[in-house]
Image (cartoon, rainbow, N blue to C red):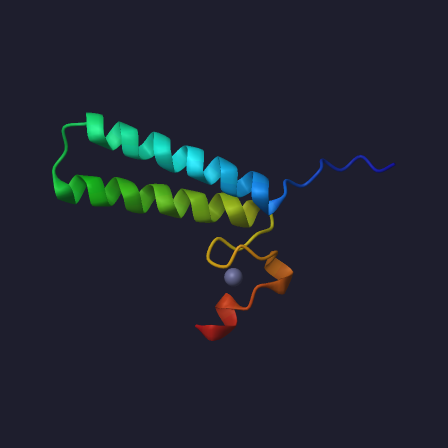
Length: 75
Ligand SMILES: [Zn+2]
């Protein structure tokens, strides 16, 4: 037995992602914001999701584990 915290599966991360997306969209619909502000919030949320995936060891763009991700190679 090791003491490391179990890493979430990509399925768990994607489920959390979709819940967060729904919450963010619902909030934006309620909020009285112009289009520029909405885009800024959506961008900030997207950046947060990307960082969250990477912190868990997954690539946000391709959903692969980071050591199997080739996205950055294509840049
Ligand atoms: Zn990738």
